[in-house]
Image 1 (cartoon, one colour):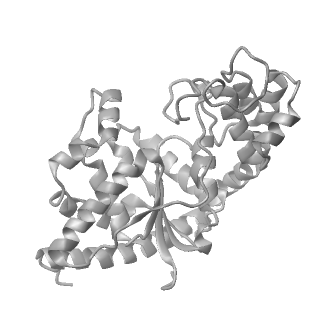
Image 2 (spheres, one colour):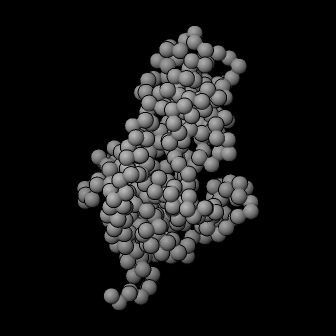
Image 3 (spheres, helix red, strand yellow):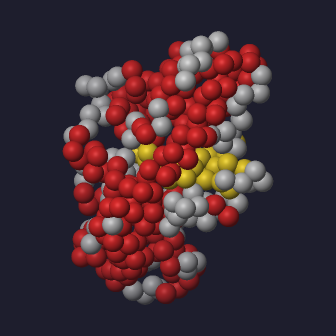
Amino acid sequence: MSDEKKILYSGMQATNSLTLGNYLGALKNWVNLNEEFDCFFGVMDLHSLTVRQNPTEFRQNARKLYALYVAAGLDPEVNCVYYQSHVPAHTQLAWILDCFTYMGELNRMTQFKDKSAKHADNINAGLFTYPVLMAADILLYQANVVPVGKDQMQHLEITRDIAERFNNIYGDIFTIPEAYIGKSGARIMSLAEPTKKMSKSDENANATIMLLDDKDTIIRKFKRAVTDSDTEVRYDTEAKPGISNLMDILSAVTGKSLDDIQAEFAGKGYGDFKIAVGEAVADELAPLQAEYERLLKDKAYIEGCIKQNDEKAAYFANKTLRKVMKKVGLTEMIR
């Protein structure tokens, strides 16, 4: 890690595989961030526990996510790519920050309200205090910047509020993180309901392209994508959300402009267009999928990366935690 670069922090939950939306909206754009920042990318397995998990599948999904990070180009020799649960400082700091967070602040979190509605049979305390653990994730590494979408901006705001409150009492312990506004990733919508964001938890399998879907599955899903009764390939998010979403996807994977795509498919039907999008996506994901399969077979390499990066993450996290514990008056362990 460099003293000259600012620190960037991000991560994804370790549930299921990643979607095309996760890849084009975030992961693909993370790959070159290390040129500008010292980057920490977490496999956010602790956050995933707010929903009941099958233990065996959960462990497998966490390993899959780690391998997908690396397969997509997050070099673990350059970035710190680690498991959140392997660094106990996350939960230790989260408890301390809980004691500096107000109930009213957590009550205002829209994601808690949304998830409570979806999981009415399991509205647990972890779901409620989720933003505090997220704050601990970010503040432990003294992150200067955090890539966030609109749905996560509220969590970054409460992180800043908690950090400023703590700093006002104890001095400048935490770096106050800013939202990272870099090259914006494509906002990929559901293939079944193009006014909704593509989600890996969607019950309709045809709504979502998973990164590990094979070519036939990808093309089949695009063939079934909801469009409209027109036949013109034209970008109009209000009148033609389905076609606009497919154009965004094709633009993101090929680099073609929306105008070029519209010109290319002028006079052609939706059938040809959908197949072209499916083939372009399959071609984009093929190298990633091949590298992912290779990495999963190289168990020694992946485990070596995990061990090395867990230790690196713990070193940085514990430096911050020790400062916090000292400031709040906790007794230091005798070693």
